[in-house]
Length: 401
Image 1 (tube, rainbow, N blue to C red):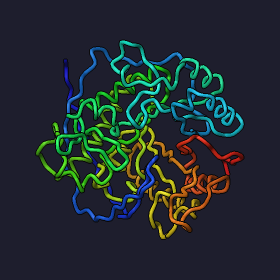
Image 2 (cartoon, rainbow, N blue to C red):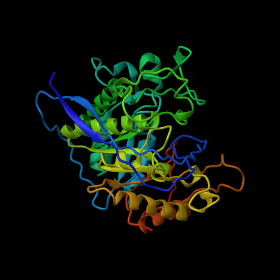
Image 3 (spheres, rainbow, N blue to C red):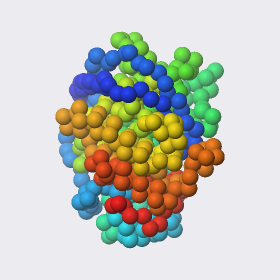
C-alpha cells in the first residue's frame, strides 16, 4: 500500500508548574510536582497508510452545529439505549442544553452497540444501544447534536485479548488498583484499531469524535522501567522517556485527525486540566499545546473536586466559580500561542465529591453548576460539557448565567 510521511512537531509549552489531577471516573488525586528542564526540539516522522481514493463520507443525517455553541451532557451506552434516554432528551428540550456525548467505545473497551456480524468489532460489542438508528432518529427530530465518545488507551478488553499490545508485569497484563488495563500508545496497531472504530461512528451519523484516555496510565513515570512493553518506532532516538511518551500521544492525535478528515467530522480530545499548568505531564504523555494543535475541540476536565490546592485555593471543591475562572485564564493564555487553535469546551462538575475529606467538599447543585459556567463565560469560554457518571443531572440550572 502506498505510504506518505507526516511530520509532527511536538510543541514545548511554557507554563506554571502545579499539582492537580482530573479524571472522569477516578476518585483519587494524582500529584505531579516536578519542574522539567527538558525541551522538545525535534520532529518525529511516522508513516500513514494512504487511501486508494481520497473521499469525504457524509452521513445522510441532518445535524447543524449549535448556533450558541455546544452545551452538552455525557450519556452512557446504558442510558442511550434505555429508558433514561427519553428523560435526558426531555431535559435538553426544556433547557439551553443542546448536545449529547454518547459512549460508543466505553471505559472497559466494549462497543456499546452491536455492529454487523461480519464486523471485526462484533466480539467486543455489548447490546446497550439496541437500536442505534432509532436513537439517531430521536436526536435528529429534537435537534440534539451527537458526539461519539471513544475511550482509547484504557482498554482492558483489548489488553486481555492481545497482551502484546499492552503493558505486562511478570508475563501478565499489568492492571492498576482499580483492575483496569491500558494498551500501548507507542504501537500504531492500537492507533489504527481505535480510529477504525471512530470511522464507524462517523458513518453512523455522529458529527464529532471525542477521544478520551488519550494517555499512558497514571503515574507511568514510576513504573516505565519495570513494566514490559514495546516502543515500536519510538525505540531509541533523541529525548528521554518523557519526550517519547509525549511525542507518541501527539502523533496519535495527528494521525486520528488526518484519517478522520475524510468523514466530515470534528475531532476532539479530553485532557486533564492540570496538563495546561505544566510543561508536559510526565507520566501520562499529555502536552496541552501538542494535542490542541491537532484537534478541532479541546475538552479539559476541570472538575473542582479533582484539583489539589491550586490557584491559591486550598479547598477547590468549595470554590467552583474561582476554580473555573482561574483555570480559564491559564488556558486562554496558552491557546493564544496557536495560530489556529481549537474551540475550548471544558468538562465541568455536576456530581458531589463526597469521597473527599470532611470539610473539603460540598453538595453540587444548581448554584455550583452555574458558578462554573459563569467563571468560564467571564473569560470568554461559552461551550461546556456536564459530567455525571450516572447521568443524573441537576434540574433547574440556568445554563447562561
